Length: 206
Length: 165
Image (cartoon, rainbow over all chains, first blue to last red):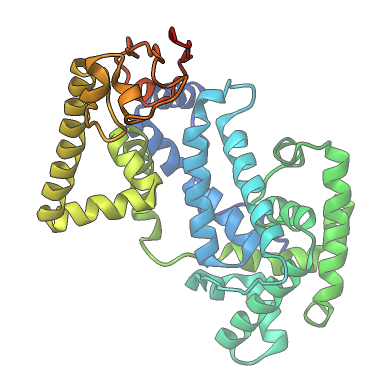
């Protein structure tokens, strides 16, 4: 079986030049909505994906992602550039999502997005499915559901680490900055979360 | 890296999540929706003070709504305000002209004429005291122009001095 490609979000746009981004941020701080629109376009997919993987619900992810960008615009004057805009907006999204999940506790229901048709051609996923079921489509959808159920069983910090590292491909130090903790904490959380997931999905990982 | 190898199967499984995509063209309108919501919030912040009061006080909203749908009520309300104002002004002017004013603005002229008004109220009573009594009642004058000041009761001392036998 081939080694999985390094974790990388397919929707991830190229990281913009810092100077170019700081110009956009400065313009947006002075009320230039066109500049802010450009910033939203740059990060909308990544922010949406993070929130979606945390909630497993498209509607909630849509609301929270929009709220994140609105809150960020309102708080933009307080952004001093100590961290990158990208880290700063990620932090807002993560805090909003965790607060939302705490309020929603025990009332969660999944509203999953469809799988991209490319999933059927991914050799790793093909191997995973062909072992389990002869019908590929049904198999992938079933696996998707099981995986999301297992993710929702994790605590929010553990789910976040798995989402940011294993799904979105962020480095440990970036995650530490977003979660405002040290790298050691990120590593230990990731290890524990993977262990948990492996236990929940043991029937599908044999 | 050792950890990553330990969870190879799981990490392959997690790749599935990267293929979960929102509906097609979902991101086409995303940023414009965000900007529209920001604009709407800005407008709400800059709205007229009257509009703010209108939205913050539901009863005010209902009253203004009634005025808009039935202008007769607006006219009646305006007329009522005018009547109250005119009545107040008239009462104030009367109070300035007539120092003796009853509670309803009716001038008591009998008391204003002289200080002898009070004994007549006792009729023709005869007696050692009453026959020759010359009560002195000082006329009460109101210097202030405030209508409420005029309505406040005042006490004046009455001296009853026995007259010559």
